[in-house]
Image (cartoon, rainbow, N blue to C red; front, top):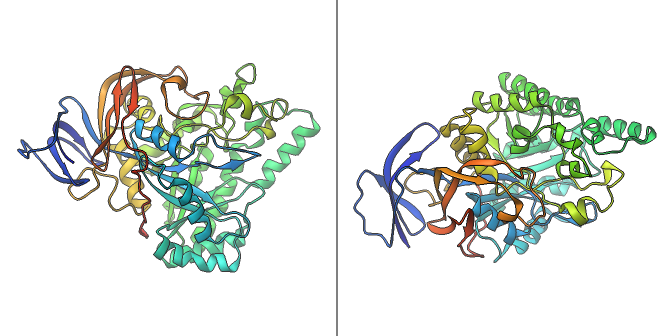
Length: 461
């Protein structure tokens, strides 16, 4: 399949310029003005942006949680991704009892095999950090192609500081990276127990049980562990102004710390938990939504470079039948998570670029370029010869009103329902083949299920 895209505005992390792109055999072969290659498909992209496909660094597909499962599997989740301009997914793979990292990897890959519409890779989540698992890290980095590993500082499967120290030191040896969910478990337990005694278990107490200080304390502590070991630390879903201050403090001291945030923390705020008739449950996630000041601080964190990537933490549970299954009278029993994989690019453009909070180049940097570089996706993340032809023709003039009924995520609500969007992915290519097309007030999936490949990633440090 050959493709010639003419007259588009190519956007990189540093600049933008008008040029043509020629694609052949899944790769970008040439970029230039007035290219005259003969191609099977020729598109005039005048007035449109040519963007690298977004890379979602944080998804939870097929994930079991609180007696249920995230609603999107690899088929539905990857279709939604393609329709949102996301051409590569980095999914979390939680280790089960007794599993080696290899066994966990192969189990999750078997769920994806033949079912993905976009390329994907996996982050092992370590829940049983026995000596043999820590020894397996070298092989996971050098052979399995999974150089990023996740641990939690809260939940029943949390790890303690001694384990984090070992993992930071071990991943560093081979150029790998440790991802950390940073929330102080004991602070959360203190508030949960206090609110239970006070019979204050309605939805607005969810964010009160996980206050900003719980994130900031855990983040401060894990940053010091990274400082001690010299390890490579990645903070997932940074949500608060106070947490960002800890990132800044560590980064300014020379600690190898990278921060990711999510659209929900940039755009929504904790007032959503007061929506009537249990609707606040739609926003129950961890960390929770914060105050508006935190959202403003996070946008500034992107502008100043302290926040390097945006992932979605895509973890969808139906509002009817799952969110309300056990949690009607107790926020602690509401499955934590929300959908987001399909709305990533449209929201960051409409709420960020179109409103002047970030530039178009900064959007490309945090959605594609940085993510590819940090996670060792050497053939992804930018529009240049030799890279995979993961290309989004983005029309900045298309207007779109978000409704879960027009989206492809397998869930019965959307946190951004009713948002008016300006700018949408018009045509999406995954390795040079068309996967999605805007038509009749929605993006339609026109790709091929099973075409997505598992990507073995390279260590980046």
